[in-house]
Amino acid sequence: MTELATEKLVSVDSHVHFTDDWIKERLRKPLHAVWDEANRKAEEYAAKVLRGGQKNLELEDFVDPDAARDPGHFEPRGKLAAMDRDGVYAEVIFPEIAGAKIVNPHLMGNDWKEVFQGYNNAMADFASYDPVRLMCAYQLPLYDIDFAVKEVIRLARDRKARCVQLTPFPSDLGLPDFYDKRYEPLWKTIEETGLVILNHLDLRASLWDVFRRDPTPQKGIFTGLAWAPLAETICMWILTGTLEKYPKMKVLFVEPGLGWLPWFFETLLDPRMHQHYEFPGVKRPPSETFRLQCGATFMYEPKGLKAAYEYFGPDCLYWSTDFPHPATCWPNSRKQVVSQFKEAGIPQADRVKITSGNALRTFGLG
Image 1 (cartoon, rainbow, N blue to C red):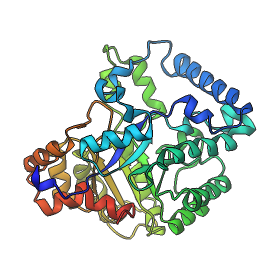
Image 2 (image 1 turned 120 degrees about the horizontal axis):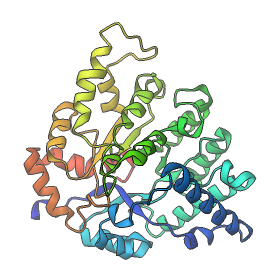
Image 3 (image 1 turned 90 degrees about the vertical axis):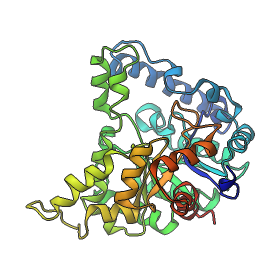
C-alpha cells in the first residue's frame, strides 16, 4: 500500500450512533421527556403502521458486528482512533437515525425547534474534537423555511459546518418538492454559505408496503429496493431546472449505487432533451448538470465504478467506507481502495481524485 502512503483518504459516508444520553445532555431538562415521548410515538407508529405488526429487523442485519461494537461508532475519540486504524484522514458523518425523523412539529409540538437546535449542537460537539476530520452532516428541517435559513446561518457561522442533510423525499412529510418557491430563501442562503447538500439513501414511505408484503426472512426484497426512489429525487433537482437556477449549489447523493446511473442518464434523461418533452428552465443535458453540481458516493462496486467513471468522469464520484454498515471496508480501506480501482481499471491520478481530491475540494479541506 505504499502507493497510498501520502494520500489523505476522505470517506463521504460514515455513521455514528448518537445516544439518547449524548443528545439529552444538550437539551434543557424539561425537554428530556419531550425527546423520550417522541421516540416512543415514532416507534409505536413504525411498529403498528409501517411494519404492520411484523417483527422488526435485527440490528445485525444493518451493521458489521465488529465495527458496530467499536468505540468509533459511539464517541469522538473512538471515532478518530477507528479512522486512524483504517488510514482515513476525514469523514462525513451521518447519524444512524437522523434527528429530523423524530424532531418535528407533529411529535414535539412547539418544542421542536429548540430540540432541533439541541440535536445539531450534539453533532457539533462531536465534531469539535477535530472539526477538520469529523464533518457532521447537520440536519436541516423543511417544515419552517425561516427557521431553516437561520439554522444554516448559525451552523455555518458558529459551528463551521460544511454540509447539511436534507430528506430526499419532502413529499413524504406533506411538503412541496425542492423546486417550489417556498424554498428559494433557503437555496440562496445555502449558496451564499457554500454548504453542501446531502441526500442520503432513505426509505420512501411507500416502500413500507413492500416490507409488509415481503415474505423473505430478512426482508431481502424490501432492503434491496431502497436505491430506486432516489431516481425521483435526482429528477426533481435536475429536470425542474432547480440546480441550474442556483449554479453554485451542490447536491451529493449518498449510497445511491453507481451502476444504474450511467444507464439512467444515457438512456432516459439526456435523450428526452431532444424529444418532445419540455423541461422549462433546463438548458443543458441532465448529465452535464450532474457532473457540475452533483455527485454520488459508493463503497465496493468495481463494475459500477468503472461504468460511472467512463460516463461521468472522475470529478463527481466520491468514495466512502459506510462504517459500520455491512458493506464497510473498515478497517481495511486502504487495501480495498487499491484492489477496487485496479479491478475498475482507473488510473492512479483519477483514483486520487475520487478517494480524496474531490472531497477535499468540495468540503474545503485544502
